[in-house]
Length: 486
Image (cartoon, rainbow, N blue to C red; front, side, top):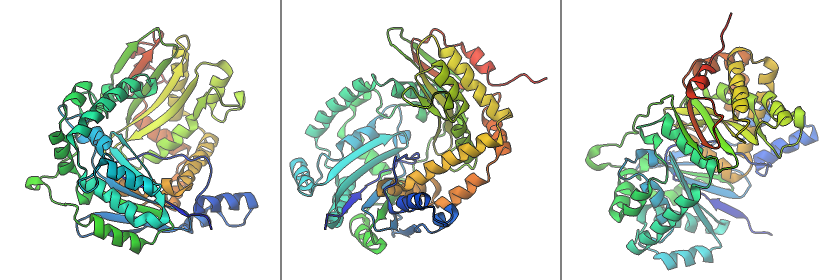
């Protein structure tokens, strides 16, 4: 009998996470939906949704939440904390990313070499990442090692050694990563977009912080950040797959029961307010082969009901890449135009959410000669969403959105990530049946009303890098955010 894998996903979500797309159904639930579709089963889509496993949730005495969903598939457990780089200030910006880098460098119980040896002897895999409102640590291991894997992850979160020698070594790694990231223009343009859209606020700062901060952050800074923000009430331990909820709870009580829940001087750190500013950042570099341009208006936060109509609107616009087939037969109008005219290399609509705000926008990559044309058609599609989107457009877009939600069930890792993020974002797990109900309620009129609320006659934020001489000036871009009506 082949080994049964578990993915232990220690999930330090420092507030919020976006949707995950997976290419093929591999989970029990994904296979069920897939097989029903292929076999022509009489069971309806809605019936399948209502038959999915429920999420069991338990809260420990210290406030740490444990959530799990059982199936016969390989397992994945996750762990999250409602804190992140948005809680940083100018002086310690980048400290969360530094903590992320130090997490697997050894604990007080397991020095560096011993830690690596123990993980490797289990055949396990560790990884982590950080974003503006999230940091994630995860571990994959064999099912028989579930208790040990969770114990190691608990040790990492609570007892990271933060040795001075390792800090200095990792400091150089972070500085090198910063240089490499400067070559990824998609990341660069989105950092600029945040910098101009949320200028003067916490969301304007990058995840990695400045190179000056990376050079001077100390062990004291790292310890202070952990002690301030790593508190049980802001943590979620999630599990999905072949797991017993009782077993996960028992393990959590043993290893996470002592996570502190009190803050210094009884002061809970509050998320700093961020304001949106219509403005722009342009970095012209004619030596680059392609221009990267992003334009966005202020969108809603995670829990706002307007997000579903906006996601439908984004699905109407669609996305495109030069490698796509289909030519003029692309499903979205804009993609069809681009495919026939070769105006740009790629484009995508996006809806980036945070707790109290968001960026609803459009990003494209183009040569310098077609920037104006691409932006013209993109803004035209925005105005069409506000004034003339049709029921047939919305029907297609809703089916696309349904597929993206079902994709979250394709594998235990995205299921687990979905559980953890929703508990932190919404305070509960929202079932796929409920999402389906919300999508079904959206019609063309709803899309027009919601898009008018966020798009029509609004001041956008614009960020552009590369050969951008033909990018229209800001006043022209702003004037395209409304149509003259007679």
